[in-house]
Length: 365
Length: 101
Length: 161
Image (cartoon, rainbow over all chains, first blue to last red; front, side, top):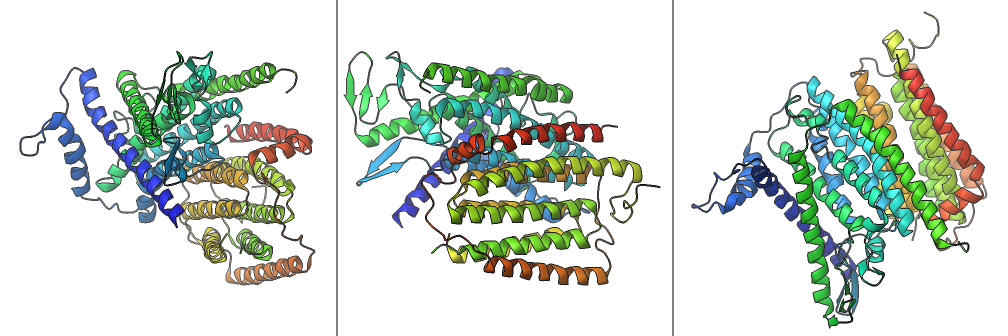
């Protein structure tokens, strides 16, 4: 019984963290884009004169506006599929966070709680499976809209997603070969040791190519600019979610931002140490020059969760800056990059990584 | 108490029979294909249940191969259906029954 | 797995499998197929086959059925007026299907099924499957990769104009 309560509490915590960072992402989208484009951004809505630099507009006024808009009921389409598509877009992305570790352990009342909502030993495969299921939201959304440009956007979007899933999966194979495990918490823990006594052995040092491939494929999966032709604003209006209004549109947009946070979470866990803070072990800081600072276990856990959250916010911000900086790829360029660029590169990376690991392990392996 | 092996095999048999039913009574070739995939999955369930029951991993290895072969077969089969559709403009199995005309 | 949970999921699986073969709209049939495949993945998880369960979702539900949906949408298949064969064939086929199910269940109950022992440690994990795949089943593994190559070449050749 206590185990169920603990798992429920962890799941609630990670969902709340994700939704907060997603909200921050939406706010960044408005304000960072404004800064990049040398304008002010959304600042009109205010509560009793308090505009909060645009926070009130983005985080209060926009969702309320979406929820109060009329839900347009289309004629001549499949209503069940029209209703299911935003759900199938949002739910798989949100439940992927069950395997993302947000801290090491928390020692409370004699129990050691692993700070990961679901401790699967095939965590990476679970992530890939949920990303595969996210394709259905796009394809069914395009189909159920009874609009040939939505269908076109849906088919383009899903073809793009399944193409970049392959590159993403192969980049993950290289990471799995490096760490020897599929469990994300074990990967995060394995990045805790120090190279040459002072350099934290984060994944980016072992697999820089895989990090680049994974980030590119991740941005392509979430159909953000520069890969947002399925949703090409100047061509297909909103692509596969043109005919959605109100709460369903909000769900599609939420799934877009939650996927940004997911890519950020995976990049930090696999390549940037996850919740690791350099030199922080379970009993406190152990600096390489000999000094040590003992900390209680709750403080260590708090520092680790904070470090995870900070890295998450940083990578979300990075994806938003990429969005507002680069122009959009044409569809054939996009497909060529996925199949003829990233896929061979990822395969070569797997071969080279495996060779290096076998040779470095010596003749005993 | 875990469910006995017989329950899993019974479910597999029922799913297989539903797949056979689908192949026999539907006229749309794509739905016939989906019923074939259902039959393959029923057999997969049997293999995994028997692998668990006998403690040997061979059942799961065979499931791995069945999945791969099913993927290859689905790709080629759907390509065939696409090219037949281009010629005949129909996906009705009755009308696609002969190679002439 | 809890027997009650098994019965509930089994009922849901049979219902969605029936939807696949009976529903007139091919897109809804495909969606019911996705549901069936995901439920089967849950059964695999209950049978200690973790790798196979997630492979089922990634390969079957996440790729093969998407391919089916693409073809249905590209051919713009609508709901058909005459989705099934005539009543005589449907009746005979249903009787045949029930008879097949009864036959298979009876045969399995009389067969020598192995005793349900506790599986060894690491059963169903990636390492155990990979060990079998790269030692005992190496030849089928290599042949499967050639098969996939042939399938890719064949599909591209057939689908080109």
